[in-house]
Length: 336
Ligand SMILES: *[C@@H]1O[C@H](CO)[C@@H](O)[C@H](O)[C@H]1NC(C)=O
Ligand SMILES: *[C@@H]1O[C@H](CO)[C@@H](O)[C@H](O)[C@H]1NC(C)=O
Ligand SMILES: *[C@@H]1O[C@H](CO)[C@@H](O)[C@H](O)[C@H]1NC(C)=O
Ligand SMILES: *[C@@H]1O[C@H](CO)[C@@H](O)[C@H](O)[C@H]1NC(C)=O
Ligand SMILES: *[C@@H]1O[C@H](CO)[C@@H](O)[C@H](O)[C@H]1NC(C)=O
Image (cartoon, rainbow, N blue to C red; front, side):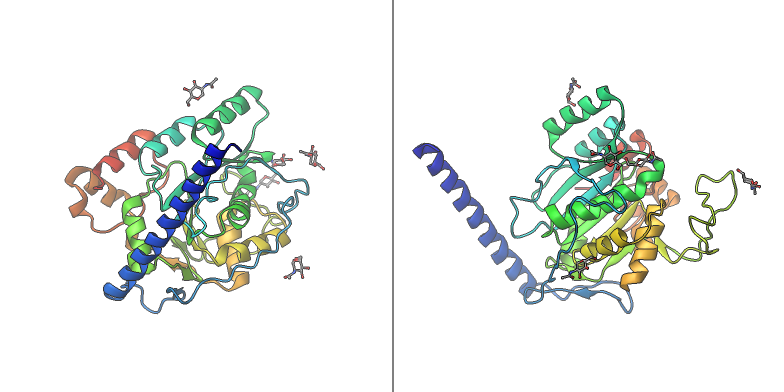
């Protein structure tokens, strides 16, 4: 380094330290001047953290193992969280197909716009098409928000993608207070979500939280026509354990390494939401807390786009399976 570079580097470091100090002062002040958090959940199964209680994270994970893949590696691995030692409020992991370039562009320009308390990354496996792989490398160079693993991106490989997300958080973004796993055909009301996390939950995070649309007594599909058909060898019981719909799952920081350790030790099961938020969550003994009305249904989505945000009340997530026009339309109806 030249003298000039060193000076620049020192200034940058000083800058970051100052930002962190002011951030902490602001949070501390905020915590002591606002009324206690109101979470409208009766008898919550998770606990709210404050400045004196933090999550102790113990990492015990074999980096190059992904369930039964023994030579796992990240083909693309952005260091998204490195410059935030004090921890991001939220990291959002969006499951995406390699070819869904347009979905990612729409998300980057709508609800996934980068802000300093929240980072968004897209998760994908690899393809056997060199042209698409080249386009993805190009996209990654432009935006730096793609996490790619060395497994084939395929429908039945969804669980690899979800566990890769947990692994990436544990190794590369362990200080994020909240972790959202979602899909690239969703709308997240990101302003409201940040407000909800920092004010109704806590800017220091929570412990033992998995919240989502909770599904109970769902039957394993046995019909040959079902997209979700599972054989008896894949899953033998008639009903799935209580689990989360996979398109919007919010984890607290402490839950992720525990889910990862469990998922790494169990046989592969391809329905990722059932596997991670049902089977693994049950094994680590973390309850699934329903988001209930904080998720828009189709009806409230129509109200929102026709009559504006006052007509639907508070919400954090839109419905799943949206096309790109719908994502744009819903986002335009959401106030800043
Ligand atoms: C780490 O995980 C391995 C394999 O699951 C286990 O054998 C070992 O006891 C764990 N170590 C700690 C410190 O938890
Ligand atoms: C990983 O191992 C599998 C099977 O053992 C092999 O087919 C594949 O080529 C290996 N991948 C890499 C990147 O080494
Ligand atoms: C690289 O990405 C940019 C932005 O997405 C795009 O405009 C450009 O056409 C891409 N180039 C190649 C060779 O894919
Ligand atoms: C899932 O990924 C593994 C590892 O890349 C690959 O061997 C397997 O064929 C993939 N599964 C499907 C259904 O493509
Ligand atoms: C499903 O397909 C298998 C063979 O692929 C067949 O043996 C079985 O009878 C079918 N079950 C139903 C319910 O159609």
